[in-house]
Length: 258
Image (tube, rainbow, N blue to C red):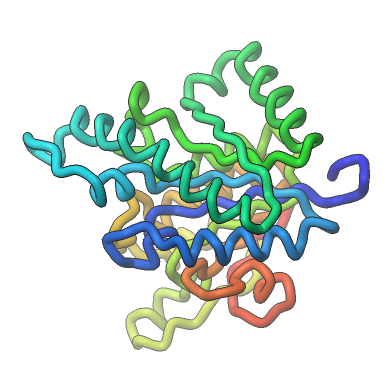
């Protein structure tokens, strides 16, 4: 919570949300996110952790070599990251929102001096009404590309920044019970206190474009609960998904603080 009493929210959006399950980054979805942040700006300040750099690059280039090669993916990230930030900047600027880019690696969280630099920098940005848009620095680190679609990065970032709430936007209305998935009814688990019980329910299915899945979000939510931070798992494909969730107009999974 900042000095004005606004709650601090970290919003994590993955590639699947930003593309709206297509092969292209959706400017409409980024505008949808910005419009909601603008509407909520008197009560909340936002930090965004965003994937999508590789997906943007694929709209512009067709690199030779094996697309699965990690160095090709790093090159795609280097090409796509400035385009991704440009799309955020253009859409947010039209809404009167200021943006800033922060590229981090997991090793930054292992060094105390680096952690303090992250905290100081992001707090200064927020104090001056700049929305930090964070991604992993994929050109020098491969953790997100290989393992987690920025879910863990979001959790680690929130844990050092006094965040009140983390929202993971994916392509489902939170976590469904395994039984309902098997019966094609998709019943959302709405309130979770004991996060360990979710392991019995989650599916191994991953999103079509992102590298994460529900398991990586549960792992991230475990980090957050251990740091006394509430987590929401929401359907980011819906328009107004933040507002609808806050107003209980959509089903979502809430993982409570300890």
